[in-house]
Length: 200
Image 1 (cartoon, rainbow, N blue to C red):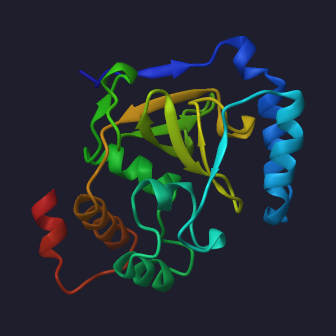
Image 2 (cartoon, one colour; image 1 turned 180 degrees about the vertical axis):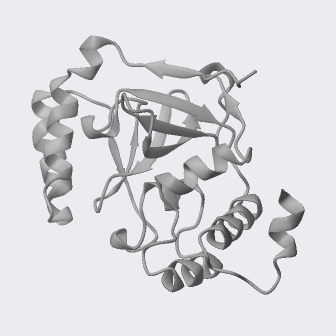
């Protein structure tokens, strides 16, 4: 019997919201320095609760999935990702691999605790975006090459999809061990392969 999938679908009104379209246009602005100004402008017409979070790391050095798994500027992750030449990194494919391998525990929205994860998807079911739950319908995620934001679940650009699935958060030790095994599965073989063999 297949595992039950817990998915929160947006209402039609949310999915078609002008706010999400405006946020999409903002993230498509390649000059990320302009994003705070653009957010202030669109907020006058489309009220929201979005806040920019000061990043401790260069914005172009990480993505939403890198942030969600706690990999930002971690030496072991950076080393593997650099060797992988942008082919092996914390991507939506890595998130699907974690799920397929049984390394992610799916939960309901009501079961969320701070540190848990939300993965967004569209009609094809493929993950497009990742956020970390902080409590009280507050999530934190990195948007494209732009800033790190705090927001409600669906206060995100509309290209990220109209549904979300929720997963128990991983510790850094769990996440990096799984990433090493993922890299191994992609052809990056390591001396100590017992790490992956033990996790099967």
